[in-house]
Image 1 (cartoon, rainbow over the protein chains, first blue to last red):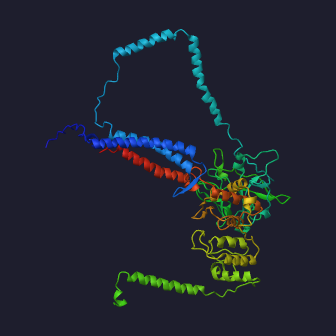
Image 2: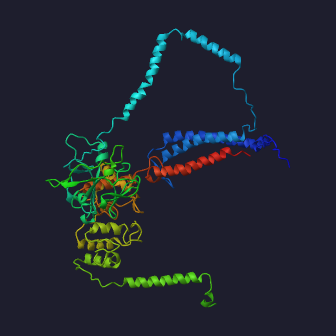
Image 3: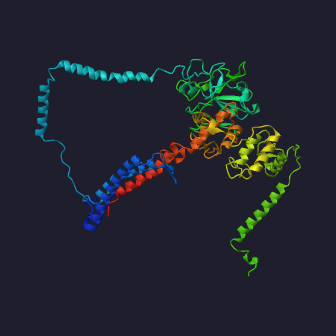
Length: 333
Length: 264
């Protein structure tokens, strides 16, 4: 036994095995027919698509198992386009696999570098053309081009201005102010405590000052859920209890995690669930987070009634509503 | 014929005996628990409907809800829930409960409409509550406005029942049921009474006419044809994604395998 390592021999290509379609004429003919059938099926698909679009009624439905009630026209347009495109691909693959030559061929690599003569020729041509174009002489063009190219880089830098301005107070303010009436969403009517039974909820928005428009951006920060419980069900500290009114408690609907609308109120467990990431808040404990990724309770809105008996906000939200942001001081809730 | 004694060492003897013993035990327990305790039944029945209802109640409901519908450890008090709650819970088969699972589910009603009506009469005789309604009294086709109903639905209902009324999950195995194929009166009664996890939507917050609009929208959604083909449950991107990830990518893998196998 020698210690010398034997040089690994190049095994070369494996022996080529011919396909049946290479050796058997009948098989070759069959493969040819298969490929042609695919292409003809594709042509039929296109005809089917055009026929369905023109001649089938757009309001006819049939019941199909699994699919349910299905629009006939859409169904056949879809099937037609599927046949038309898929069968071209299937036919091409079958063609390549069965009929196109599949003998392995070795192609040797060549030097990538061009011949010296060709390289010299290119340089010479370049100089000649540059001279003709006056690249050395026309300084006005050269300088103005330099200016234009240099300035092009400026606009992206200026557009960076859109990263600002800083939000300022926009993330901390809502339309809830001291004495703002609660109005129903979407009816817009003010609400009295007796309108809510125990176990009832209402989706409310702040009543806007005359002349101001309700926008989706507004609703996105102002939306509040009003819930009525039995007052003895609350497990709140004295301050938070004073924010409720006869068992009616109000929370911002904007989740403190990612800003989804938290309004899945389970009347029996008194839990509020956020549909996006399953954060669960306990209404009886001032929306304390009992499950999920939310880091803070939902902000509670202090309630009172005005002289006419309508529910109003006692004060604005004491903390910014919605998800965290860079400048938010979250140490105070 | 061999005597039974000879089968005592058979493989199936032990399981059969076990089942027989369990039957005996549960029958004994059933008899024992059916004997009413000494709690007195309060109240005097006034109308025949109420007294019939009380009879049905004592027979079928009182073991959990108490002899005077005052509720117990596992069941809520029914005083003041009104006829609407009875009609909804019993009429949709949710009550009596099939089992103590996360929530009562819709099933074939156990009581006939007549029995449900007398039960409702009894419960509403205990304390005032929302009255039951009939499908005919809900003139949603005439008075409902589908566009308004859609807006109300998206604000008040869609978060639990899905934007197309298909239902959705809540916490701990509870769920908001699908609203497809639900009779208008049950939708109305559910809004008024707030069954199980559902909060109440009083007529002060969503007026009776607005409720008709919500019902009309739900019925329209129910009959809405699937213009674009298979609806995949109308639950949004989840089922669509699932289909693409399983069927779509499965198909692509199949094609990739076909592409790379050498033809014979």
